[in-house]
Length: 122
Image (cartoon, rainbow, N blue to C red; front, side):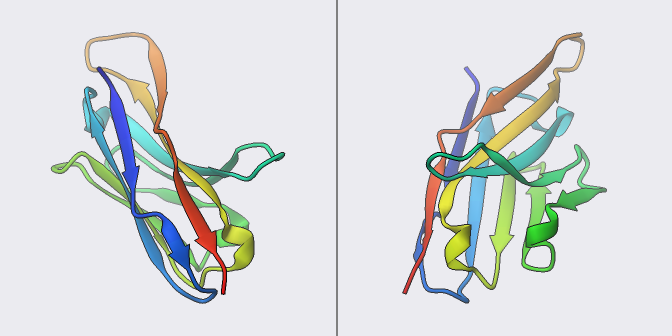
């Protein structure tokens, strides 16, 4: 059974920082590119950042460059999202996503976590 479990969300003041974690199980973690998305009510889910399987390359959405960064620890099957200089408009539910192919398989799969709420407010 595949599980992606996010943690680290909460309430933070504008200008503050949070680090989200996503622990994966049931997949060969190093075979999956990992991403963070976010969503607010009434809006489509938005890509925040992606990191390749080995962590050699990352991509962060333009509106978050310089404030957010993504990293992974393949030994711990965990991906992180470090968020600095948070703004009220960063308030959203943040979701972890795994996308890839299991070794020896041919089908491409995507998995989602249940989401963690981040609220930026004074």
